[in-house]
Length: 144
Image (tube, rainbow, N blue to C red):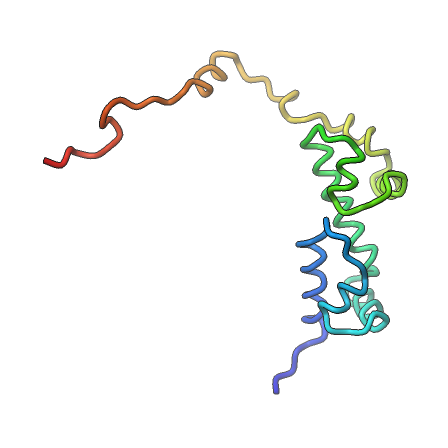
């Protein structure tokens, strides 16, 4: 029987939190993925990664929420629900504590790139034009 380092089991739980942050995961789910009891898992996770599993999962969710606020025009409530959180009030409080401003202020501080990148209209028309090909234009030599 081969020895598996304890941190390897914890990585399974961490990977689960990273991959499925938008689902209603609990510490019990993460502990089950690691194959440990809830209490032992929580102690070992904190000792190994420097934060409790619940805080790690919340951080992943807030990072994804910040990315959605920067790149989409979805409402704050929709962003909150799409990252796996249930309460907009708790989301706003946690987001403000982490980023130093409310989700709405964060979005205003980070306008979409389309506002910053000014592209000349002639270039937009060139790339928006349908790319039509004529008969056999893009195929190789005609088979005879």
